[in-house]
Length: 98
Ligand code: HEM
Image (cartoon, rainbow, N blue to C red; front, side, top):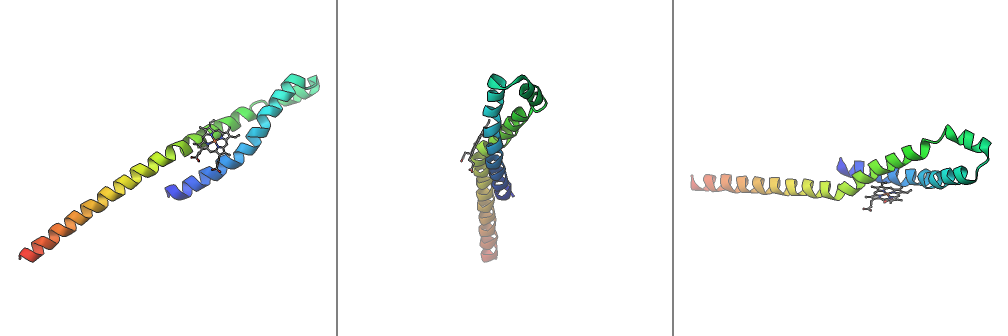
């Protein structure tokens, strides 16, 4: 589950990076050098770069946490397997002593 989700998040983060990288300098250029008409038109789309950055920050935060999530899941799984082995060995020794 984590593997599929992480693949999807990585792809999403990578592809949203393209419009984000275009939108932020475009917004700056329009604000600095755009005609009044263009600035007025842009005002309606003004929130787009912020929303894209928010999406990047959220998916990026997940990608940042991913190695720690995987590590803790692996630790949990290996400790469960060890418990299982211990239980199996204990059952075997009880059967042998009977
Ligand atoms: C603002 C908050 C952001 C955070 C917290 C963040 C965090 C991350 C993290 C943790 C990774 C994975 C690194 C790894 O372990 O390989 C990553 C990958 C990447 N980030 Fe971001 N990022 C942010 C914003 C951005 C922005 C603004 C861009 C570009 C416009 C960007 C482009 C990329 C790309 C292209 C990758 C590589 C994806 C891949 O593996 O294909 N990120 N980011």
